[in-house]
Length: 219
Image 1 (cartoon, rainbow, N blue to C red):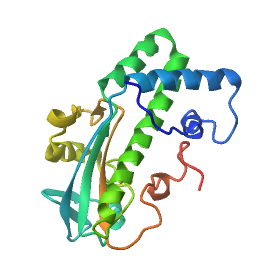
Image 2: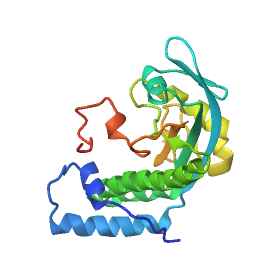
Image 3: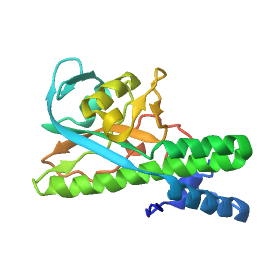
């Protein structure tokens, strides 16, 4: 299957560290080659489920059966009565392709990493657009995705998010003891649903506290 998706080349270059600088023809051609190869082998999958949200003391927020202590998350979904627990993956073949080029061509492997990071985010954005349409039918709006590892939202909650969605059985997504998702090009997130209109339902860097991150998007 050749998955069709609108992929930002500017975003790929950002992951490669160009930050607005133009790439030469060799890099540009390599990006196109890597992206074409990647889109031929990915098998993206996404699941989510909506749960009630309650807020407690000391920045405790409970989403369904999961209680999370995180000031940043509780602020991010403040005012939301419901939130979606969301998971998406590009599938195991992506990791195998990157591992292959780690042995054969390291420069190509680096570009594939950047392409895959861009593709998983684009896929999540695409799925969140569908969620936005469904939420809109109920007069609701989406907050931006907020993932474990953002701010003080600990990575230790990866297991809880995957467990409540039964991700291993449904989309083949697990978490290792190191708290890294497997397949690696995967995302888990909390997405608040609110009756108040927000300016953007898709955002990452604008809500992240890592102001000096080299991969931060331009505001």
